[in-house]
Length: 382
Image (cartoon, rainbow, N blue to C red):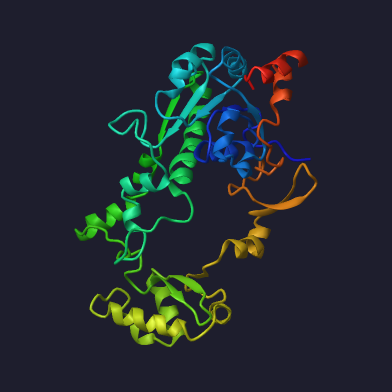
């Protein structure tokens, strides 16, 4: 039997869609919170129901534009600790479920809104997605090759790191504050704000050198051979992060390039060193470099594909790749819980639920009869 999680006993109602909000509520659910995800089935037409992040949750369909739908919602809210939403500013107020209204029903509610640009400011009503937030915040300008357009990463960094994770942190902070004050509060999470907060290294280097950070031309982005990526003889790639002198010296010795050991940040010979390193790494396959470097202190790593990550023994041992049995009895791979707590560990407790799968059970729990539940569906309430 699984141990209780750190958030066992915390009840979360999640009105959000797509990735930022649902990924946040998955983090909470992984650590024991009861999460009831609430979505309107009318949006199924968008085909954007991201099922993988609905593990450990319950899911119900509910139309908040109906009076009965709002009645059901406020019954849910009476026993909730957290409400999460990801609509554009003003939408929840128009639906009649904004913070001021909800707070009157449940004064202890922690109400978290995740938006692209925040609840105030000139961009509050602007539509956007991950690339837009990273771009406006100055992060996208630092990603990619120096002589090419900025590259959009293959993972939604602004959604998850700027939105989901900051929202989870904010909710946990508000839960602790409520223990001390007895009051809930409102949390305003902007994914663009979250990306601006990713710039301390860039700002530090600008203050240190007086130069504007440039794409693929910074201390931690391809300018120097000690912090770079290299192609191997078999067309694979590895990363080098030998920032400290001792790591750089060890790397030079292993590559037979000891003459460069004292020239780590020499700008006069920078391109020469880079080209020499590139030529050296193309002499062996990735597996051969693995044999050369092994566990030596050179700060290196394979650049792995998703398929390789899913089969990697490190992530198996760390339980970052786990097997989960679905409701159909079939087993599939799932990503694990990255925050490891010794006494109240998080876990993948239940498989992802289908859209609206928990609707009937939750309505019964709220006191509705089978006939009422059937009528709700016929009337487009659920």
